[in-house]
Image (cartoon, rainbow, N blue to C red; front, side, top):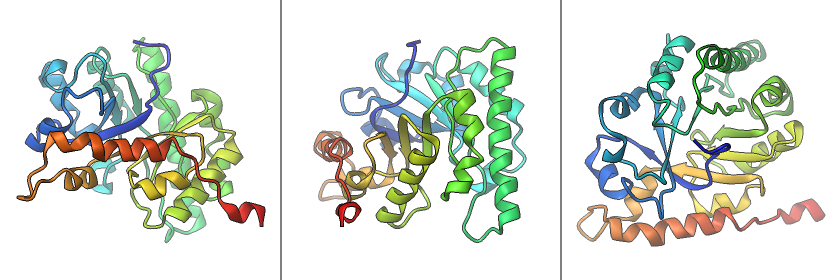
Length: 256
C-alpha cells in the first residue's frame, strides 16, 4: 500500500455487481483511477477477487455515505470488521457519515456531529489495536463554522485530508461556500467531495478540492441514442469533470 493513497480526480460511486457499473467503470484506471463503494455493498469485494472489478492501479475506498436506514444501528466494530476483511483490497476508508440536516435543532446537530466524530476516532483506535493497515480519512460534518469546529479533533488525529459529502446539495454556490468555510476553519490540505461531478459546480470549489465522485449523472451522459451507457463515451464525459476540478474559478465577489 502506498504511504498516502488519498483519492485524486474522478472516482466512480459503484455498485460492483451491477452490469452497467462493470461495463463503464471496472478495470478502467485511465479514466477511473479510484472507485468509492458504500459499506453495505462492500461485501462483494470480500466474496469476489479484486481483479474482477479493479486493475492493480485502480484504488478502492470504502465509504459510509449512505441513506439513514442503512446507518441506523450499525456499530463501529462492524465497520472495522469489514475493513479488516478488505485490508489487502482497499486503499482507504471514509466512515463518518451521520444525520446532519438543516431542519435539526442545535442540540440534535451537536449530538449527531459529536457522534460522527466519536465513531471515527473509535474506528481509528480499533484499527490500531488490531494492527489493520487501512488509512482512515476524516469525514467533515456540518456546514457552519461552529459545526466544523466540533470536527477539529478529527483533523488533529486523522489528518487534514478529508471528505465532504455533497449529495444533499442542490446549489453549487452554497456547496462552494460551505466547503470553503470548512477549509478556512480547519486549515484543510485536500478535500474529496463525494457526490458532486457537475463541471459548473466543480469549477466553483476551492483549490483544495482534489477529488470528486459520482455515478448516475455519468451513466446518463454516456448513453447512446438507444439509452444504453457506452464505455467509449466515458473519456469525453470524465475529461470535462477532471478539467473542471483542476480549473479553479475564483469568486469575483471576493474582490468587490
